[in-house]
Amino acid sequence: MLALVVAVSLGIGFVVAAGVIGRESRRLSLQPRQPVWRLEEAAAFVEGELSFDVAAKIDGETLRQLLRIHLNQLQFKSDPEAVDQIADEPTSIQRVYREARSQDIEITRPIVDAVVKAHLQYLTVIGALGAASSSE
Image 1 (cartoon, rainbow, N blue to C red):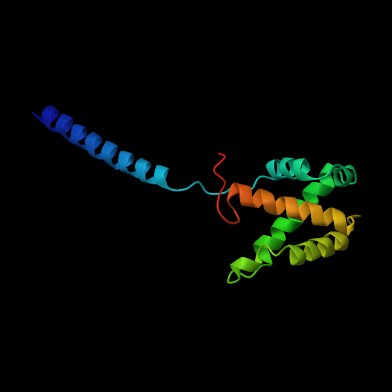
Image 2 (cartoon, rainbow, N blue to C red; image 1 turned 45 degrees about the horizontal axis):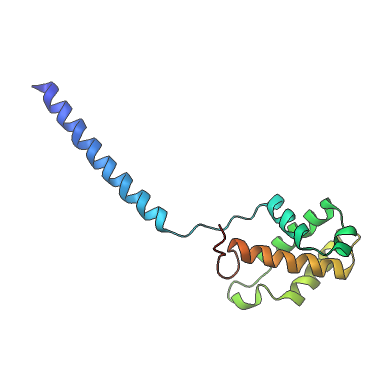
């Protein structure tokens, strides 16, 4: 008799657990995918968007440093209240250029301009700025 009670209890527990897990997985599958910024993916995207002249003047490590600087500028130096101003290109370009020069990175303003514009495109494509792209 005790074995029957244990078996029924285990069966009921399994059914309840399966129902809860199924409900939660369905709920989570309906939520939009959260954007994830990956350095190597961002660098590859930006390299592909740069013109030949700009790409010839910048090496991979400098590009990655500029991307980190720009992301840090967006993440830590922007006002959360002003959502429209987060991707303000002239301000972003100037800040990234100043920070790069303060870190002794030998870079010109047109290169920073092209990198920041391409990085903002990447952030838009992954859904971190504006609406997410449906190409996934």
